[in-house]
Image 1 (cartoon, rainbow, N blue to C red):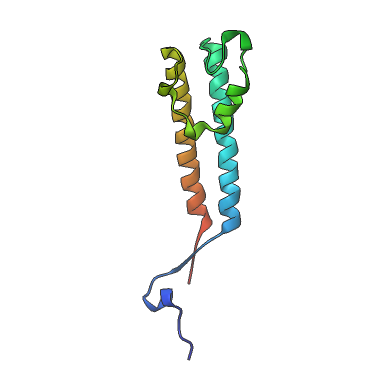
Image 2 (spheres, one colour; image 1 turned 90 degrees about the vertical axis):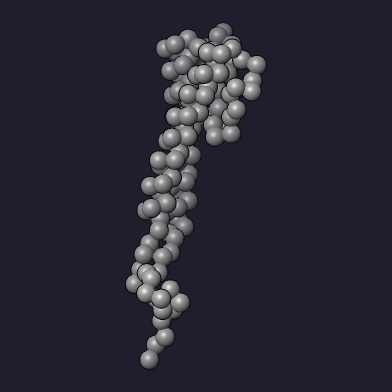
Length: 118
């Protein structure tokens, strides 16, 4: 006679996490978030001519601050800076869209990484 493990003893299914799938999804989510931030800066600077994170003479891509936004999009506090209001609003809108992308992607990644067994 075999003794079931603790999870099965109480009638609950055994759940495990596929670490490879979770890490792959996390890395993919980070890349998508960086791209969303970059596209947001391109739209703000190129379409609306709002100098997000860099002076206007830096061009559409801006300067190193643009890439810092793409790398650290989740950690910004745009309204604490000394920038003009339109720059603060554009930066916060970009951050909001990046946050929504991260939240929706990671929830799907987490669901797909959890395995339920017998």
